[in-house]
Image (tube, rainbow, N blue to C red; front, side, top):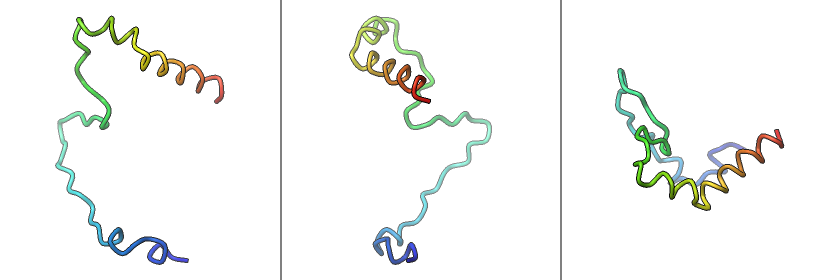
Length: 65
């Protein structure tokens, strides 16, 4: 079976989007931010459930690998 048989025609008709040249620039991933969190927000972020689960996932992943 070919990809053309598996994928809908409207998906096959999509064209790639243009990516502007990035010479001399640092390209970031969609979730990266080059700026630090404002100092007033850092203590709240350190105590948030999201940061706790993030560190849990990181430590859990390292023990599984």
